[in-house]
Image (cartoon, rainbow, N blue to C red; front, side):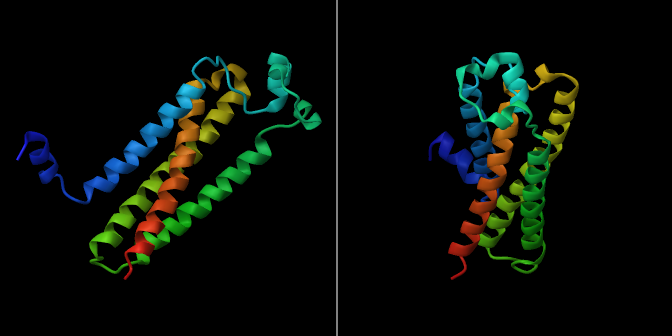
Length: 169
């Protein structure tokens, strides 16, 4: 047995879902960071984009002159609250005390969905509050972090239920 195979042999099977979830997040972060690499500032509010960069040569909606991110912030938080509630209920009540291995794996993936969702909601609110004080503070790093946390929340939520559903039989 090779050295690498020996290392992988000793990693418990329950750790693999965690490694995959962390890898998924890292991959998404790298992708969003690559897309925003040459960007100096990212804007929550379209009106700030219009004011500071003249819309960047884009044709924006007329509402971009007065629109803010605040109503969308509430919608994002509501969706994350729903995902966290459903995932937490499934972890708590699904599969009994000693669930089969596939259900345990699904619960681990759903737990990552909760972790990413809580981090997404907390950081999104923190970054938007900070942004309201300094429009230049929403950097490409923060943008990439928020985007990757949000999509990781959704992907782990969906992935956890797929693992659970396809291993019931």
